Image (cartoon, rainbow, N blue to C red; front, top):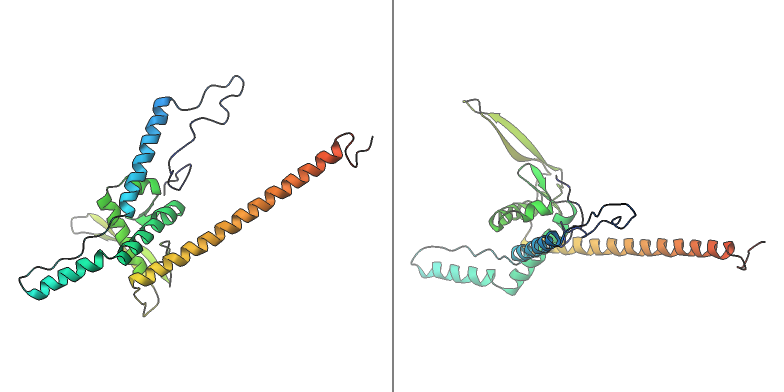
Length: 238
C-alpha cells in the first residue's frame, strides 16, 4: 500500500504552502509558488467534487423485461424501493463511512493490493463503484467487519495456476471461515456502520480528552518552574 502524506480526511493530499523552516537565516525558500498553490487548490476541489459524486451515487434499480403486468409491477416496486428516503439515507451513510473512515484509516483491498484514499480517488466513478460493491458484498456475507478486516476465521489467499501454454494466472479466493455463516441484510450492515461510527467517536473523544489533560499538565509544570526560577517569585532563593 502506498503511504499518503498529509491529511487523510477531505483534504487528503493537501500540503502546507510553505516549509516551517522557510524563514530561517541563510535558508532557501522551500514553499510553493502561486501557480503550484492554485493547482493544489483546484485538485483538492476536484477530489471533493468526485468524492461527493461517489457518496451520493444511487445504483439504478434492476429492471425486468416483458409485456406482462406483473413485470411492470416488479419494475415499479423496485424503483420505489430504490428511490425511497430510507434507501438513500442508508446508502449515503455507508458510502460516507467508507470514504471518511475506511479509506482514510486503512484503505481498501482490491486486486491483490490495498489502495490508499488518493489512489481510490484517482479511479473513475465506475471503477470506484465496482470496488465498493465488492467491499460491501464481503461485509454482507459476514466475511469482513465494517472496515473490511477479515473476521470469523475468514482469510484471503492467492492461488496460482499454470495454463497449458505456460501462462501463469493468479486468483484470489476466500478460505476458512466458520460453518453456517449468516448473510447480513442492508439494515444490519447499516447498524454495523453506525456502531463503528459511535465507537470511533468515543475513541476520538477519549484521545482529545487525554491530549487536553497532557497539555494542561505540561503548562502547569512549566508555570511552576517559571515561578521558582524568577527572582522575586515565590520560592526563589537568592
